[in-house]
Image 1: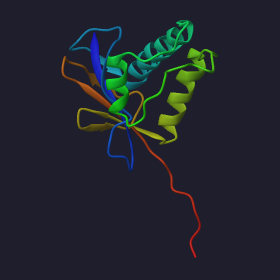
Image 2: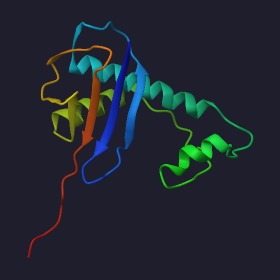
Image 3: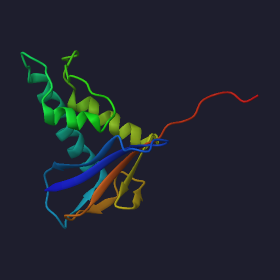
Image 4: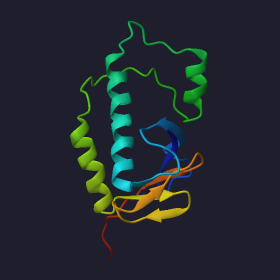
Length: 142
């Protein structure tokens, strides 16, 4: 099934990832625990990340469509991959679950915040997951 997700950061106007569509296992109108959905999203993202690491190009030049995509971020880069190390799936899943439990990320399904990994979520064709990366302010007061 296809789901939509976006990643936002507090204090930033633009989303880090704006409404991306991905394919995960499952069926619409069924309920899934948040942990199951997070596992599937991370698995899909790690697989995509590792595939980009395998695709090597002899020439790293920019095509017109690539330039127009980069312009929206305000920084045009060649897309060269300097670190060819692949992500480890188990470590990535562990990190996301720990970040959720520690309150470093907030998860919203449509407009409702999910506060427990075991909470069941019913997914339909229009369900949007929003992940908000929370940042703690550090400093000293005088």
